[in-house]
Length: 429
Image (cartoon, rainbow, N blue to C red; front, side, top):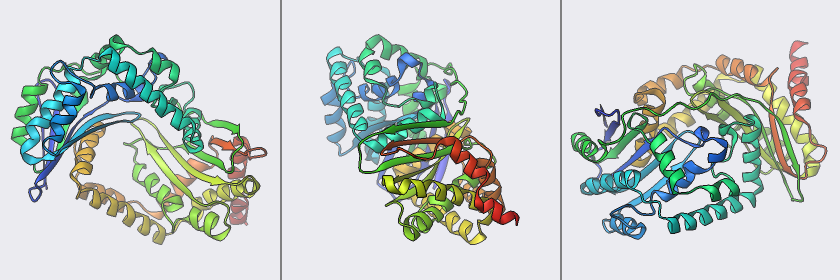
């Protein structure tokens, strides 16, 4: 693999990872903009714009865009997250000029036709309805909003029916002009790619983008607390969380490994203790979301009402136990899982293109696999025990639940259990 990076005159970064044994390539444009930059009245516009980008330009119809890429066996797609939006294509190596041309066209020349906009707004309303029909999706939306109350980072990526229906062509054009600036964009490709050819294509097709960087997002303020919704369901969807670490934190890799040790697979502590030994839920897992300036450590479980009273304190005790008893063997196993995932991603052009693009947006450069592996290997069991204590004990938790949740442990009771756990008392004897 050969990674090359060029910054154009307007600030656009072009980065490639050449995989010469392949005949295909994955490429895309990643933008440093997501739902967390939206004002209240803009909630959902980033996601709507991502949809509308494929609905026609001054020279291509929506159908024409689809037919042109599929005529060469390629595919186009896009996604929106809290901090980034990306538009990407998978194509044969010789069709890279076509893919760049289409991506550049849809991001600079979209017409945002009124009829297409009305149809896509209706589609997104259906998407919002489907999310509202899913108790797990609802629980995660509540979780995000409770962790970061009254902030863009805490609002749903999809927006609300009211905000989505309120957007028009002018709103989309204004947002596009404000956020899609060359210094905040990365054109990344991996696979059978020629770096110099891609740079030339980028200069030709994207050289007209504004060279002024977009304004930065508002700093996140973790809040925490609880949001509980009683609903007639068979299971309660429960999410517990704590303030995590941003990407650039010295403890970023430690907290990622901590999430794996606690609930990253069937051998993890929470799965073995809660699910296998006591049968209090069908599945349980933990995770860590990192962002530019904050993070959120969380765990999710779905359980019956009758098991809630036993589930919550047992989870709390497992979190406290992690502050004292994580072993070198557990760390080694989780490091191996994370490192294997990293190496497997290197074999996929699409995964690799996304990885190097996000690294440019977050770190300003591409991190080598050896560099990342070294940071992972440097994490010790003592690091995890310290990070677990700093994260779980004496902090403000986030608790959300939906379903038969009457009588559930509250967030303040959870905080108290974490600070006065029998596990801590036993260790002090």
